[in-house]
Amino acid sequence: AKWLWEIWNEASGEFDGTPGQFADLSEQVYLAKERIEKAYGARILMGLTSGGGPISDGWIVQRLKAIGKEHLVDHLSYHNYAGAGDSIEIISRYIEDQRAFLGTLSDRKDYQVGQTEWNCTAMFSTRTDMPWNATMAVKMARIYTDSKLDYSAFFHLVDHAEKKMKPGLFETGDFGLFTRPNEWPAPITHQPIPKPVYNAFVFLNELKGGRRLPLVSSNDPVDGLAVVMPDGSVRIVLTSYDEDIARQPYATDVSVEVKGLPKNAAYVCARLWAADGQYGNSHGEWVRLGKTPISDREANGRIMAASKYGVLEPPEVSRADGKATFKLSLPGPGIRLVELKPE
Image 1: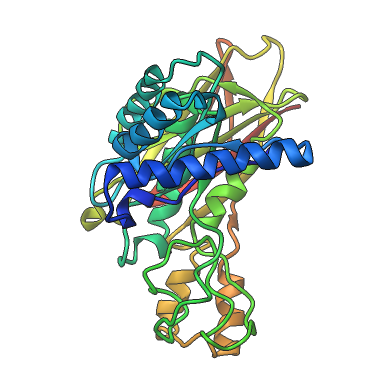
Image 2: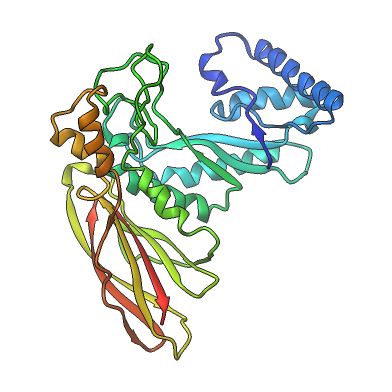
């Protein structure tokens, strides 16, 4: 295992001192890293400020250069949020800017580049609780994969348990994959429930171990990722991603062609998983039950059951001219996992 550390979490947003004072504090952190590595024979992979951006990161780099310690920087991470307050398309530009910043470092070592936080720009909105966020997560995974990032980390796992929130299970303005486990300051007493976005990662995890295949969409809102597995099966995660939630819900008829298959092989659709407004929608069930409080255990049981993705009847697969073709209706917002297996 390899651990990558941020020096400060979005430090420049909270710091109200001078650039020189910022550099003074940062210098001591990196020197402490060096001392610990020598004392314990450890390797601490230290980044910069992540959410601070090129200005405050530049203050650190300039100071480390001045004292001959620039080599203590090991990776470069940012925090990227988009898709609600601003378009998700800007993420690619952010990543280009991130790589351009590496040009300010005189050390030419192979820096790892990634995102230690990402989600949609929906603070204090309900988007993070809704099926829409699952479509965003798949779209963002596509962008990050295309950009060949070394790593990325969704922010975050569980809604904060250490903050006082409204009594409702959802709509707390938090970003977790799961609802919170307690009512602050009470001890942990509730089982966290997966939000709809959790199913995006369940689906994407099914691509693990596969070799990526090019997936080309003829038009929005459809996008996704595809792989071929060692046994020859093809797995595809499709998303219907639309930033304008005012015109949702709607469905898009999708025709998928898989090219380059063995000439004599026949394929069938072995799996079709669904997550949308109807399936895997724990937030929708909570709304249907009257926006119950976190303490309502009976309601929580029903909401937990509703959080599970749906398993649908697989579509028919036709085969001609070295291509396998199938059709399905993709709700917006919604995601699908499709698996084609050779017979």
